[in-house]
Amino acid sequence: MDSNLNQLNNSEGCTNYKNLNISKNPLSTDFGVLLISHGSSLPYAEETFKDILEKYLSLTGHNAEVGYMKVAKPSISEAIDNLLDRNNNIKRIIAMPVFLAPGIHTNIDIPIILGLEPKETDPRCPDGNYPEDHYLMESKPINFNGEINLIGCIGPDPQIISIINKKIESAVSKSNSDISSDKTGVLLVSHGSRLNYNREFITDIYNQYKSQTDYSVSQGFMELCEPTIAQSINNMLESKDLDRIIVVPVFLAPGVHTKRDIPTILGILEDENINTHFSNDHSHSDSHTHLHDHSHDHAHGGLVEFDGEILYTEPLGSDDIIIEILKNRIENNI
Image (cartoon, rainbow, N blue to C red; front, side):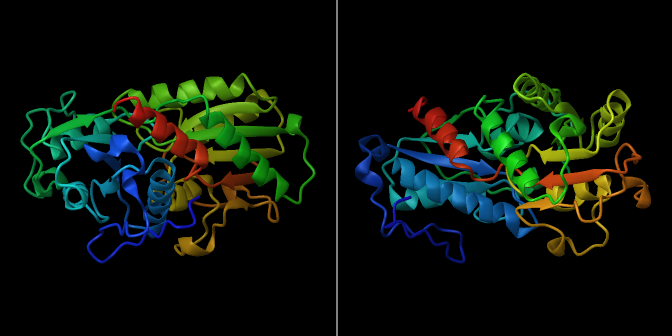
């Protein structure tokens, strides 16, 4: 990474480009790049996206900013203001949702926030009349008269499999248990969505990964869809005798779902202090986690009986492969 890059965020969420020459790329003079994130009440996702932006700036030299749909700062409208503050002559903004899979946020919420037509009818509110306290009603209007080109999200890029492999290898290397690959299963966990896109995404990733590994593999959804996490693990155990399950949350950034919800469903989160239970690829090999020893009746899909080891990895994060995917997608739309 460029050692001269000094990216700081002030209290208003504005990126400091003092030591970055964004004009080193001649294509950066007439457009801005808006990388859109969901936003989280926990700091982990914001830290990940600061890192993503820093790497993206260093790699491309584009006039780029991260904007958050809700909770975190800068908001999408504030991020666009930041782009214009740095270059008020830009004619268009290339907006990319930095999401792994399409869904309600990418197809409905983000277009509406950007002042564009949603790509489909909102199943949450088919008539389009949102309650006054809905975050779509609270978003600020976009102050930009040029063209906004909203492109697709990351999707099931084959390069993602390399990141998954790295996460799994790291988790196994930190385990104290000597368990063979034929006694190991891998569960790829996705969020789930009211729309079918999330299922299509994780199924594609699952099929790609399954064709390249000797592990037993399954997929499960945190909520809204089936098979649930518990159903998937039970199905794996019914088909093969396993001593270890490696759970990979196929999410981009850490947040409430990966730090609390999924660990709770797995039974590896024993109290409410989520900050003390996770490191970069957290292994639970010391205690050989027993899911049935924990009573999480609210867990989506129920619990499973498993007497082996669960290794739970971090999400994909700001891996350099993700940055390359963003760069290629955006520059294909310049």
